[in-house]
Amino acid sequence: MVQAATTTNSKWDRKRMDELEQWVAYHRLQAAEGKCASYIPALRRADPTQLGICMIEPSGHKITAGDWEVPFTMQSISKVVSFIAACCHHGISYVLDRVDVEPTGDAFNSIIRLEMHKPGKPFNPMINAGAITVSSLLPGDTPEQKLDYLYKIFQKITATAPVVNEEVFVSEWMTSHRNRALSHYLKDTGYLDCEVEEALEVYLKQCSIQVNTEQIALIGLILALDGYHPLRGEQILPKQVVRLAKALMLTCGMYDASGKFAAYVGLPAKSGVSGGIMTLVPPTLKRESPFPDGCGIGIFGPAIDSCGNSVAGVSLLKQLAHEWDVSIF
Ligand SMILES: NC(=O)CC[C@H](N)C(=O)O
Image (cartoon, rainbow, N blue to C red; front, side):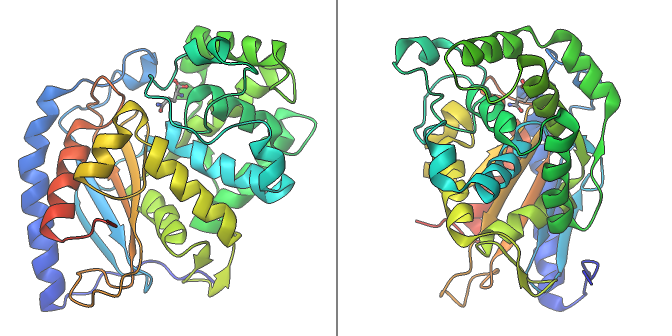
């Protein structure tokens, strides 16, 4: 049985919470530098001044600050879960025959490299082209069956049944011309395992799964522990698959800002255009670390920058990584 994450009140904990609250109050102001995504009409209405964070340790202990309970859609954070799901079913080499593991330095929805390189294999599963290929690889003959496989993995990690935000899904489905173009191109070059509209339905529904920072932090925690679920006391995902996913998060997870994020924060992370960021601190031998046993981190701050990353979220993470010395490097 999965225990609910708990909140304790030790002195040390109070200190970490107080620091986090102060940082959230400060970095919330940075949101003015960004804007809520507007190319998906339903995301336009988010409150750009919101910022929240949840951190979960292997004990289930939770540290939170700001707007951590606000629901948002996973968007590209879901790409990590679908990549893991496809690898769990097919094995790593089958998936990597169809999507590469190289960063692009281009925008997340860029189409340019598909035609510039032969064969037109998508560069990595964290950009839209690669993620749509991965969604098409999920097992099942229909979008429902493919999503069902993905939902089961989501549920195993978070102990909650995924809920798709239909409004966000429909809003993107109706306007997804670029993703449709990418999907047609992938179909033409043989990198789609089902029909265009089916792959798109799976991809856009997985992007529309509604979460809050706690669920995102929980997924991050399982990744930090190489697939081990400490609250279930069980290895729920294969170690090699999780390690590969983390390498991809580090090199490609923040799109064309992944290099800067690795340099200034130093943690594997994945962002989404709704303003979510999933990141994690692996267990460390440095016992003076505030998180020696590791932790998962979920962030929500809907004002994003030109790369599609939460402005306030990234700036909060820079301070947190610096002050608490949690970079993996
Ligand atoms: N960066 C993102 O979060 C992109 C996800 C979004 N659903 C899209 O395909 O455009």
